[in-house]
Image (cartoon, rainbow, N blue to C red; front, side):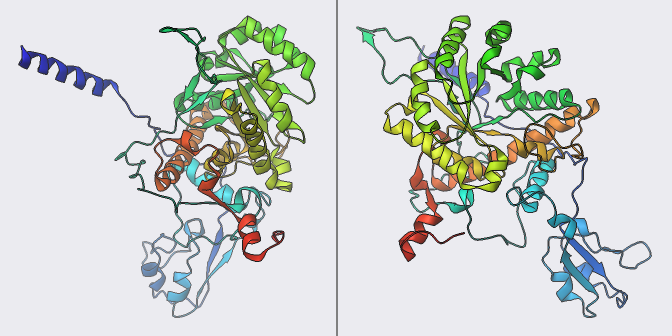
Length: 475
């Protein structure tokens, strides 16, 4: 009997192991359809005598020998700017310079280097590594003035990317009650509706562009395969998106609620775009949505401006489940510190009010690279909504506002939908791997523990004030 019981227990444990599956993002090579100009221009001059020292020196394949035995023209696209070939050539026949067309890309925030990195991640799904090291500024404003602090590590978590030790990147969307009420062993409190997603990243609604239905289809396909959500403006919703409804958050205006009751009932999360102040009608609208569909989470998208911090605390009394604080990318480009102040300001206000866990905080705007995800969470966000970055991965040349410029090369044809979805998936996969690197380096085994942990970061302005005194002098 004992042996039989042991065998059955072993089979049961084995069965449980088979059913358990770690979260994994499947990446696949997805070359860009809109190519970037090479970062470097490599030139070979007439005094080259085919010694081929450059071929031996270059590990990136910039210099290769043709079938005729002669060194071919340099392949500038492969150059990493290490200048080894310049040093190796005894004739001084090679030059490497920064491409003026590359420097013209993007702007002061979505810099050419950030665009290049996004392209690499979207193509390969891998963490980018520069053989020539980091050549950027030491510090800046906003996210660039934050550095990760790994100094308080008790034991670094083993590499979560390669699976030796599991690190959870799952987060919860929805309200958490401050306490539970019991009568004897009976639970009196109504269990809250919580939606779990495996990564702290959602996909924001794309700007208007030619072929937008194809772009939307690619975005919701990517969200479905990632297990997260894509936000879709209700005016852009069409029947072709229905198979992915479980991973779509419709975004409505306050005046749209009565016209879209079937869509609201079918959605797990609903987002309402709010322009402050609209307190009186908003409270009635939230109650109406809860009556229509009690299990649907209500998210409010607030464009950040002065006073939002105070207002978010008020929203909790309305029954709001998620607060989405948005800062326009054009405003972040003008003032990079705006997004960091917005996230931490709202988070701190909710903490001071003792209601932080009663609402989920999502931030968007200014998310230009992988490091901005954990930095947003350190500042207090539960999750980040990625917008312009994934559109850049598909060919956008940094278009602000609600519509891509007429000359923007972002065009998604019907046959490009799966390709575009894979580019988005690859980008998010690379960003998640870099999030795992941060969590592993800090010894954390789940991303939830990173939220609001300001001690996990160093802030340049604080360090400058501490060392030099007075106000920070960084421009």
